[in-house]
Image 1 (spheres, rainbow, N blue to C red):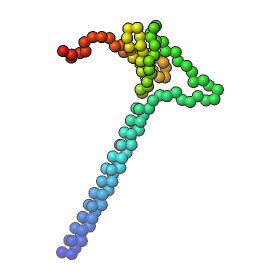
Image 2: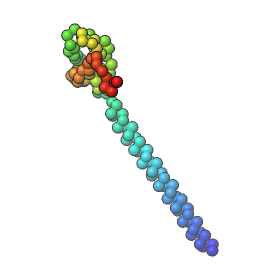
Image 3: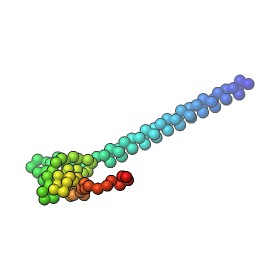
Length: 119
């Protein structure tokens, strides 16, 4: 009986060690996946800001045309674009501008009317 107990004790200890090793591998895998996800999120949120110019080089200027008679009320940044709030003769509008190139991506105009789904 003593020999059987000894063999059983070795098997139980071996399986216990195997469980601890497997658990360690699983935790390490989860940590690696979390690190990859954090890097991916950081890359997605990174804004293409102009890099600091080396001495002697100008950062440059961008001319962004606005409609005739319009005035800029506010400018805010969000991601890779700027939102420019304009007051135009027709009413307020939001112009979306690419930060890097100055290209106008679109204009949102607010016009009177019935909102969809309104009674």
